[in-house]
Image 1: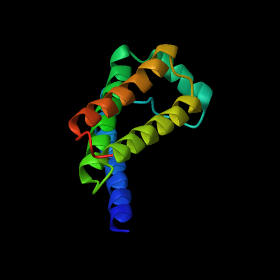
Image 2: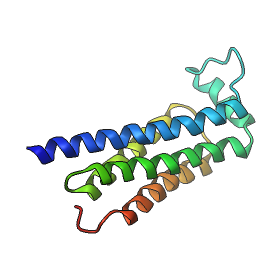
Image 3: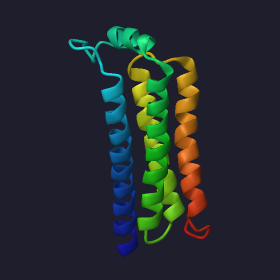
Length: 137
């Protein structure tokens, strides 16, 4: 029972760690590339129009946030887990991939960004796995 609780808390801590890292980098992006005042963020058409005006740097910062967040979240989950650290790390990376898919479906993104988005999360998760012991689940 102790393992289950600890591993669940480790996964939750990893998810929170990744969310914090993603949020910090995206806050920087929002300062550098602010959303125009009055833009309805719930309007997919309006958001799609705004997205088409963004320079590549804005997208690269978002990708960096996913890479860093995926890495940091997966690594934290794996390190904090009592057992099965690698499994906890994968669970966090998959959670971020699912959340990212929901975001991608919410309003239009460039096609190349879809591929780069999942690549960034996958690379971050894989880098974290490389730092976790092989026998940790």
